[in-house]
Image (cartoon, rainbow, N blue to C red):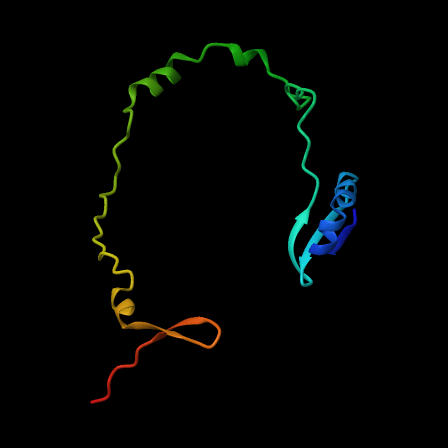
Amino acid sequence: MTMIVINIHEAKAKLSEYLDAVAKGERVLICKRNQPVAELRAVEQKRTEPRKIGGVTGIVIPPSFFDPMPDEFLDAIESGPVYPESRSTPSRVAEAPARYGVRERANRVTTKDSKTKKLTKKMPRQR
């Protein structure tokens, strides 16, 4: 399988050709200013025939599988508690409520850089 690398302009001009190439099993990488932004690849087709039941061969179920379970085994299962009691005591850990940066948010101001906006910390006053 090969990968074709093209720019957006070429992809718009020859989209049908690249779709045919993708249908044959190739991948097409679309770039914007030589930086990859998208990839064209084939979509997996749905199954046309039902899946075979079983799938694994060689599994043999012995006739004893269908015998009833012994009474001792059933009594042990049915006589026990539904939810067994735990032996350890649960721990109750108190956690401090989350503050989510309340103090930091109050001290920040936005300043405009020449091209982008940045968050900077406000400096404390000198006394």
